[in-house]
Image 1: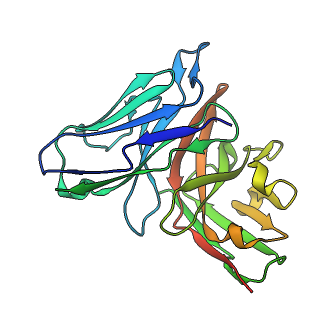
Image 2: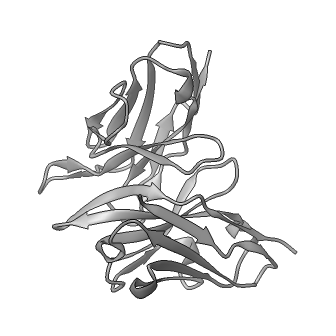
Length: 113
Length: 122
């Protein structure tokens, strides 16, 4: 199974500042035949199901604010919130959908400093 | 509007069984893979099982193989998860979710239900 490891486990960022979350996979999730990284990012607020933010490592879902961006390839990925807003307080998860079983990172809790 | 509504959770003793359901609406059910993902309250997400749009292919995480069975009824637009031989560690909120599979390419889950809680305890 591919192990997904996020860092940090939690972070506190001031409003308007940048938040950066890292995700590392135990093996590459880059599918060479289509040059796509099978890596997604989710946001989960308390009492709610996860919400898909980004797929293919960097493709933002429709309706997701452009302050959210994803980058990386192969085994190392980053989710960046360029200017943290109060409504971004949540737990963020990365997911690899390259191999079965699909596996999530352990989550990163983002709070306001 | 896409809607996924889970039901069937509850309190069950170790060794017991439940049948979870997920009623889907607002999209062409047979065009999507469907998944079950679980989450222990306060903990992380764990993918449990998935089934192809036509029901011919199924996948399971190792910890539930032989105990859980995923199925779907296209006529009823409903996804199921039969959970047998339940263990205390199966206690979790069970979400159903959909994902697209298009031209040989898998996509991640893009719509989720609110979940149904399964509690395994004596």
